[in-house]
Figure (cartoon, rainbow, N blue to C red):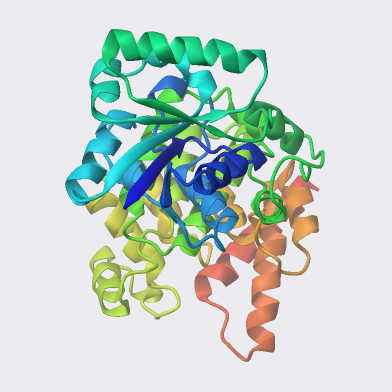
Length: 399
């Protein structure tokens, strides 16, 4: 079978990507296409690249009905930067009887010699390049011939529509709340809106690049531990929590690590959660609905090497709240309850308060939870009662 490898950042996956894949399939040169979202792109270290889960899910929903397209997490799970040469070799080793081709737009010919080990890449893998017509195509064919003569490259062109889209422009439109329906599939637009994917990009682009690399590595380690829906929730909590941390001048690394790891034990079997929670030593949180929180604190310490007691405490009490909550505790508690994909009642009020008054936002969250439990004839946890009393006291003292 002839399989095309179509790698990219896909941040977001837009109509240009869709057209490229469909044109390659319609060309008859390949039987299937493997779409491979990058893990940590080596050439974009100075940009805010969205977490891999978001980009993988956009690709998955975009090609959900295309039986000849597979979305692979190969680069997401591989340690280190995502290089095309390594990806192609891994796929060839895994499927030795298949013939693989690299699919790109013809514009890559201008800089492919600056890629990672270009001579090896072009010697081992044939290129299938989109032919979009016009003067640029003439230049591409000249460059292709030069690469054939210089490096023995095997290059074929296929016809594809000319769709010139900028992922950077789409992200900027989404950041300011402008419609992006003309640039992405409806299901991708819905995904971006539901998860507020680019809402805080303008402010978070200033976050230290080293922290983003650390978070991408954390996400990679969480990938096999959490179901995709749970991982999306954790990332939503992290992005919103980072926004709140900047608003309230709380340490960004503490907030980000607590948020991305707060549900790290959520998808473990209940028996494992209870064992971990018991070792944490808090008998008040051993109910099956609550055990994932102290279990998560233990897992964060043992598997993810988190030794900051403030981070571990925030994870430990993120479900119920607790007495004497600090700003880190409050940000994680609120972000967990009202991250962008949540749809409970009264969320807009809580989000509005969260911008400038964490005590009020925490108080309303606790009230909403307590009312829900009472209506369901379930007991309110003592930690939640104490947390609400503390918030009432703080707010009264300010008045």
